[in-house]
Length: 173
Image 1 (cartoon, helix red, strand yellow):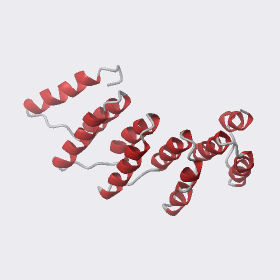
Image 2 (image 1 turned 135 degrees about the vertical axis):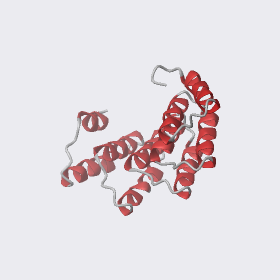
Image 3 (image 1 turned 120 degrees about the vertical axis):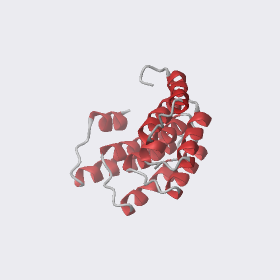
Image 4 (image 1 turned 90 degrees about the vertical axis):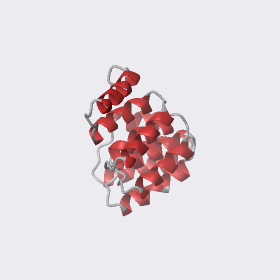
C-alpha cells in the first residue's frame, strides 16, 4: 500500500483468505487507509463492512482515513455520516477525528459548523492541541474574521500552547 499498489494489496487479501490465512484488524486498516487515499471509497467502506461481518473490532484507525479522504474531497455529508456510524459501532473518535471534521468544514467556509465541534471535543475530555487551534484560526481567517482568529491565538497561548509557523502564516496570509 505504501508504494501505491493498493489493488495488488487487495488482491493479496483475497489470496490470503483462499489459502486459509485470515486477516486481522491491522490488515484491514492498512488496506482501508490505502483505498481511502486512492479515492476508492466504496471499496474501503466494503472492507469496513467485511470487518464487521467477521466480528473484527473497528476503531478510529479504521474510520479516520476514510473520513479524512471524504473531507479532502469535499464530501462532508459522507464524512459526518461515517463519524456518526463510527460511534454507533462502538469506535471512539479521537482528537484527530474531530480535527479532520473541523478542517473539512473550514475548507468549505463553514467555520461556524466547525466551531460547534469544539465543545464536543471538550465534553469528550480531549484537550484541543495546536492543530485544533490552527484549523479554527484558518477557518476564521478564510471567512475574513480576523477578530475571532486573534481571539483563538490569545486563547491557545493562555492554554500554554506554543504557536507554530503555521499559526502565524495563517494569520498573516
